[in-house]
Image (cartoon, rainbow, N blue to C red; front, top):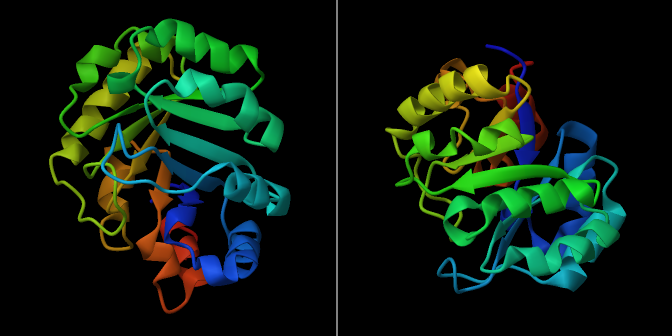
Length: 217
């Protein structure tokens, strides 16, 4: 299996011992992943600005924010100023996606486009040309701990073909239900980055789980 980039989702961290989990991720993973939910675009609310600021201050590796919210453009400068280096917005939440992606990049951050499980990857044929990464949701967004949706493996493979035609530098990120048991399938389909919450923070040995997901164990 190729070396995967692993981005643990802090949504599954132990907030009573947050600094300990931040240190764990800093020492072993590649990216810190923040799931920002507003209770409107998805049926859940995650965490607000103070917690984002705390995590960014403690981070020694890059921080990315996955905005599962309506009107995400309102928060780009705020998150950039807090220390977020990459932002992904949902295809389904943006009426002017090209403008939105360009704005993220104008602010000096990497720009990603996320899609829900039901959204066809062929709709991304044009936007991949200016995107740094595409985030495929492999569960229905809003909650952690869900099981991986099997047909998303085919979506990853199809997206890989689209990217190779239009922008080979664009990465594929997979978020939802990623485990040590299905990581090889996901990697072989063409994924470059995986988001893992429960698979890391609920493992008996989280550091070892990260290394297995990375493909170095």
